[in-house]
Image 1 (tube, rainbow, N blue to C red):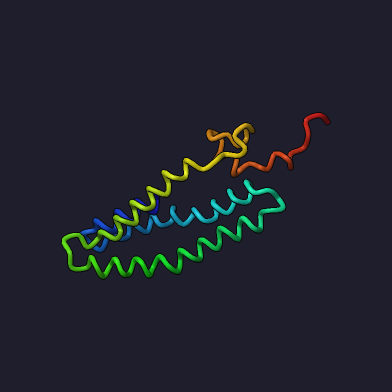
Image 2 (cartoon, rainbow, N blue to C red):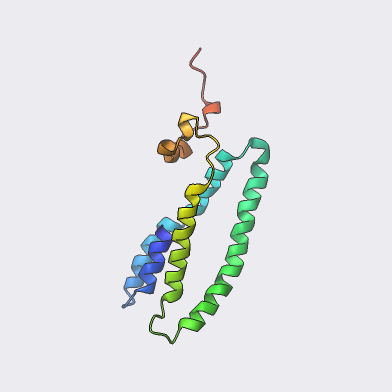
Length: 137
């Protein structure tokens, strides 16, 4: 959502100083990839982690290559219109759409209390339950 907010700020900017507010939002949105990598690492089976991280990196590389090309074409098309920031608004809408679709992803460990949705963020920061010492000692 930070990226979507950043796009809206840039799209509606009326002064150069407004762009600096988008930098603050950029700081938050740039934390997504490390968090996503951690989430994928914790969710994937130990023998499939390399494959899962490779898939994430492949999609990231694809979007880093094709995204700027598509965005440049949109910028040229909307440059002389009444809404020159429309490509940024389109990116914000796409980001919100992707975020809303993420709620439909399956939760394979929903029965485990550590991975329940209410504890998801804490679960990402907590040690893996398998690495904790047993209480039976």
